[in-house]
Amino acid sequence: MEKTQLMVAALENGTVIDHIPSDKVFDVVNLLKIQDMNTPVTIGANLKSNKMGRKGIIKIADRYFTDEEVSKLSVIVPNIVLTTIHNYDVTEKRRVTMPDEIHGIVRCPNPKCITNHEPMHTVFDVVDKENGTLRCRYCNKEIRKNDIKLL
Amino acid sequence: MVGKSNSLISLEELTKDDILYLLGQAGKFENEPNRKILDGKVVATLFFEPSTRTRLSFETAANRLGARVIGFSDAATTSSTKGETLKDTIMMVSNYADVIIMRHYLEGAAKYASEVSPVPIINAGDGANQHPSQTMLDLYSMMKTQGTLDGLDITLVGDLKYGRTVHSMLTAMRHFNSRFRFIAPKELEMPDEYKEYCDANGIRYTESKDFDEDVINTSDIIYMTRVQKERFTDLMVYESVKNAYILRKQMLANAKSNLKILHPLPRVNEIDQDVDTHPAAYYFQQAKNGLYIREALICNSLGIQV
Image (cartoon, rainbow over all chains, first blue to last red; front, side, top):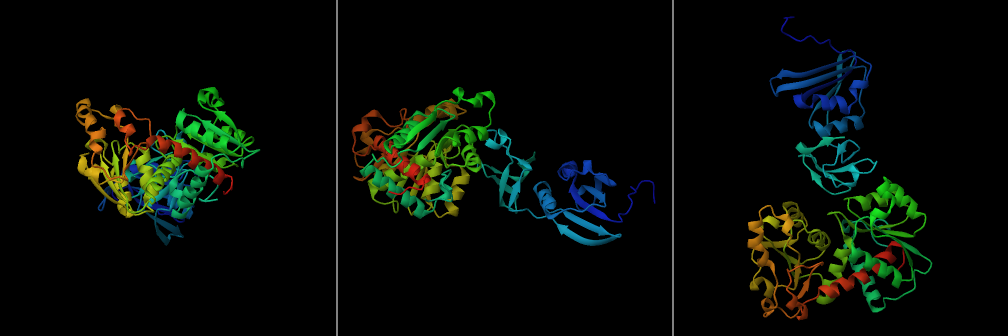
């Protein structure tokens, strides 16, 4: 291997999250609480990508994600692909899709929304999966994809 | 009981039949406002934000139904100033009251309260979000004066951007087949999201900046709202439009005989005082109709039909 190439060990078992927009890599880390995991984790950011220019990739050994965890990811990185690996073989590729509702992970941008003042969970209805538009179930304000902030 | 629960948070929850049922109930209360059907019940009015008109109307409704009323009209006198959460306040009051009527300065407060409260919540306004009893009294006023909510030409005038009442009216009127005209200066025109809502729900509308006799003479309902000076970033623009939306008596010379002028009040100068004596002026009766609607809403929340 040339010295200019990044060496990352192939996963025996675990999950690969690829094609993450570079500026979202650490949002994915936070959302999946990868910083709290004690299995080997490889995080790559700003890697060259033919399709995306620059991309991020995260490899997590010995860890698989539930549908619920995966659906949370869709809020910040729609259309991402999760690859599940068993014994060095790809056993599943899952494209992340937005759920109908999102509980407790997105902050309502409306400073006058009750969710920003009470110790409570936020709830958003996904009104447009294609464009990633959410509507706060409490104050009814709509948020577009680029304005979504995580709690 | 109509709606998805005993609480009333937003008109989105109500079907056409629900709305017509509540208007029918209000009509019965107008015929006989004093009924001691809530004897022994306690109604709480929690006004975290002051609102004299709405509070007096709800409290009068509760009193005329024979209920006892507890509550506060200013959050400064409550434990919320000590840092108590809304949830705790609601849980505490629900120990005492059979129904809670609340106004709050935060949007979504009533919905959240309805999720934690064991007793029904009636939303008396949550910030700029919802004010269903106001819209119901607007609908009642239109129904009462026109005999129908279908086939009307309804002109909404003034601040259509920030005006909560005009937005709620569109939500409720999606069930009916009336036509809307939106008359507003560019700075205060109906937001795109509400126009998209109209398109999605088959609500017919046109838009204009001109509030002239052509508009007035073809309207069944003119719904005036206040053009608020503080909404303008450029006061020159405010000066240029403020007088365009003042309704004066002489403008009503050729109005339809069934025309009624509504206004959620308070009015400042957008309806000239000389209009008050015109037969089309209806805003004070409109406010009075709020009493009957609120009697209907309180009874509905307690599962009582008259």
